[in-house]
Length: 266
Length: 344
Ligand SMILES: Cc1cc2nc3c(=O)[nH]c(=O)nc-3n(C[C@H](O)[C@H](O)[C@H](O)COP(=O)(O)OP(=O)(O)OC[C@H]3O[C@@H](n4cnc5c(N)ncnc54)[C@H](O)[C@@H]3O)c2cc1C
Ligand SMILES: Cc1cc2nc3c(=O)[nH]c(=O)nc-3n(C[C@H](O)[C@H](O)[C@H](O)COP(=O)(O)OP(=O)(O)OC[C@H]3O[C@@H](n4cnc5c(N)ncnc54)[C@H](O)[C@@H]3O)c2cc1C
Image (cartoon, rainbow over all chains, first blue to last red; front, side):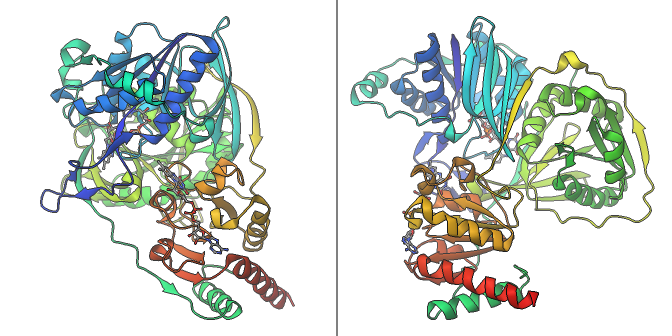
């Protein structure tokens, strides 16, 4: 089975993002980068599918050169190959341009059976790249997958559980397909020292705009219909009131505060 | 492949809302969007329409008509009964390319995100995710779309100046629910489907409702959440009791989920659900940044924690420093007593 996992490098949430007060842009220097947490589940699921059904896992990322680090993490976990899509021309990509660029990279990999994305990235937070990519590649999409029940390679079918608002939906569709995964699909493995060392030495091919072909107008800023015009820090939440007193008294005051403000109605 | 929608953006006029429904019920976010859509349409001096794809379109249209909409495009067919990405996107693409709205609004629900991401890619237009604020730049006639990113740490205002329609998904419960109008004056236009039964690419085999919660988190006005401080799964029963008394749902921190005390569906936070209830009560939750990312935009937050320095108190509207095993039962006791008093 040919498995492709899309991963994004994101700023660690431990390191709070800072804003440049003059330029109004994000300061990314000096901020620790990690694999998007949801993509760790995607990598793990790719590797598990390989272990279950045989085949090969390729991880792909679009980003600056340092995104190689994220790809190496995936290799250390057990992915077989990695490709970085990187070019100055890709800068400023919104989700439309990102999905376009990734789709060209994946097409270049040849025939594939399944593409796995995370549910969303923790920085851009849009959850739009997966569905956009499925459209570009003309793949069936199953979003919010919490379990892959079965892949039948003979009938070329995938059956999966997806987490929707009011419960779990079980669906089945034909391969090739694109899925996006949520956290409870698995527990990502922690790579051992040996595989980390091996991954550190891996040569990761970098494909730029020329390698991908496509229309220059569809990449980066030019290919991105959305423009961020302003970035600001939300006003900090007003630190509230600590209700004093012994438990029964404090609880009574709390109920009074909530009912008098119509927050609860008894 | 069809051409992009770039050509002549002045052809695009009006505001259109996608009506989301599941199991025959219209999602309340669609009505909220009709309320906001009306305001935007009035500002721009254009009309407001709704796009209704389904199998019971005509009866649903009567319900939608009550929300002061000018036109409803109904695309009705048996195979459109349940949402599927492929069929719904095909119909929506057809409706948008035919009737050319300048703005399309969609709820930022699981269904809405699955749909909007695919639709925008098909139309090759901009899509702003998960907006919490929409307004209009009157001079340029552009939609100003404001949304949280980086787990709510920053806000960004986004425009799509060069392509149409301008598309946005909007979080449920952010826009006010509009009042229904008395004598709706609406035009209903039947649209012939362009998809067919062969376009249903998914087999929907089964639906397993979430039984652990009485109300689902995304819809709940009140959420009672428990964290590691709950000590074990059995103690969540008191949170369920409190939730039932208040008509709410039960959430959990990742620590509680990872310990196996609650199913993942209940996890609130960066890798769980984002919620925005009227009241969020955090019991034995420290308030790690990843937890706050999923709940800090709640209207009101109550924190119950024995550690006065717990970061959750920094975002709490009201805090009680104390042992939750004393505070929560007392809360239940006093609420029950009050309710009885009210009843008699
Ligand atoms: C503050 C801010 C707000 C933004 N708002 C919007 C917006 O509303 N609309 C919009 O179109 N763009 C927006 N963007 C741009 C957007 O973040 C980028 O286009 C980004 O490359 C992908 O979007 P995402 O981070 O939301 O990823 P998501 O769509 O949330 O990611 C889902 C999955 O797609 C895959 N994936 C995503 N990016 C990559 C990548 N670079 N390489 C490999 N796989 C990837 C991963 O599997 C990931 O788990 C915004 C950017 C910023 C900084
Ligand atoms: C990439 C990433 C993603 C994450 N995503 C999420 C997420 O989506 N959601 C999430 O919640 N976390 C998430 N986390 C984990 C997060 O960092 C915290 O570890 C987690 O939120 C802690 O849960 P907690 O507050 O229940 O536990 P703790 O931090 O252990 O806090 C327990 C609290 O209970 C209090 N307490 C104990 N006993 C009592 C008592 N008897 N009465 C009153 N108070 C008591 C303690 O004072 C303490 O403040 C994520 C972490 C990472 C790295």
